[in-house]
Image (cartoon, rainbow, N blue to C red):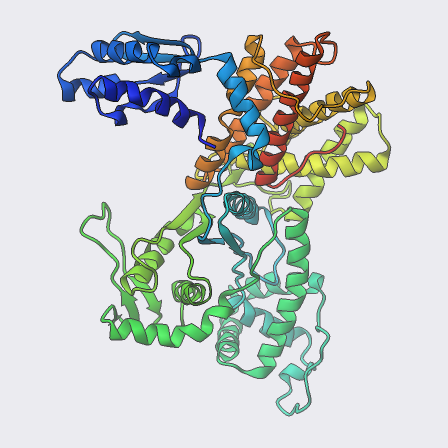
Length: 592
């Protein structure tokens, strides 16, 4: 099913060619003056220079040709206006026909354009042995939406958590554990038996061990040196430390999966930096052989600068002077692993803006070395900071970094209190509903902002049932559910051949016009890795629906065919809204 803009362009293209103008000038856009028209073609303005004619004359030629063609029935109005615009309004009959086509088509007419393509989405980045905090929120929420969007469009989307599980924090934990529990067999050089299956710590203990070790390493150089040595031994296969590492991974993954799950975020791959280690020796040797890597002040580096760069870019360090690999090396090893196992046609990495240089370097080395084809898109979606009302990065009241589960508890509690202000449901149902609404408030509050920009976390605004918020979207869906429920209670049933009739009011037509934007909103949101475009679409859709609802007696309509048409139209609206919120990663309750 074609997008509405393509349908209109296709309808007026023959008029351009019949008048002797190139058909490519028939491009159509939404009007930025809805009081004057619904759509606009500015092709005459662009064609004027080529054909050495006044834009208004070209526009008038095209409009006259359309007026005399069968395509005229598609429009209620098509006019040429100064200085050369073609203003267009769709006919109510054509618009109703388009609605019925959407209603009949799978996915409401959206085409699965991604068939046969694999996309890797790297959107976790949490470190093991540490709780998820608000700093992990944006990558998880944005990444989950991108993954869902791509999958809906037919792509083979592979989401990877890409855990930080192989760096210095492992050595710090090992040495802190040695200090606290020196009698463990991992620290007994004479131990010959198998190591215990049960971890020597709980998740709570582990979450205390790491920050204590990290703080100590900043004051105790000897402790830091021991931690660095422990990291080196771990990475080189020392079995006692590998056994501790496996315990850290098992305990951490259980907790991470639970907390990501509470956020409605899932991953296809639970891999980490450690999974790239087998590739690193060969990777370093290959970069040497290809003449890309060279020694510089004891380190091994690759120049990535190009003459076209607008600013100076430093070389990518592949190996430090002490022989240690870096994040760049690990990420390149991960790319080799992904190419070998999945051969993706696109990569999407989702991290904060501070990692911009890192990914410029990694992407360039990957392509310079031929690990990734030159024409394979490698997208770094950089997100801004979630700030408090003071404009600074969001913190707890005590000034610390807030755990993600604490943030979710806080927002769910605020929604629960609001529900209980006008209590009409049981406490149990209120808590369940608060969890659904709270997640929607949190996710929509984040995703409705352009990813690259900072935003202010405002609890009161996010949980509001009015304005551009998640609860407002859910309230609209629940309102439609309520209307449909009452329709059924009144004995209403939709006959199999029920159709949506042409609009008889501005509110009804505006609702239909907004629904036509659905496919473009979904496709553009994925193509531009911009979930905020879907948020904007469903906010506008909710707005026009509520205006239609407030101006139309849907259930009290006496004409049965008209009432049936209304029910079909709002059912379509509900389906589109529910599809879109699923793509954003949340759902609607039955009641609010």
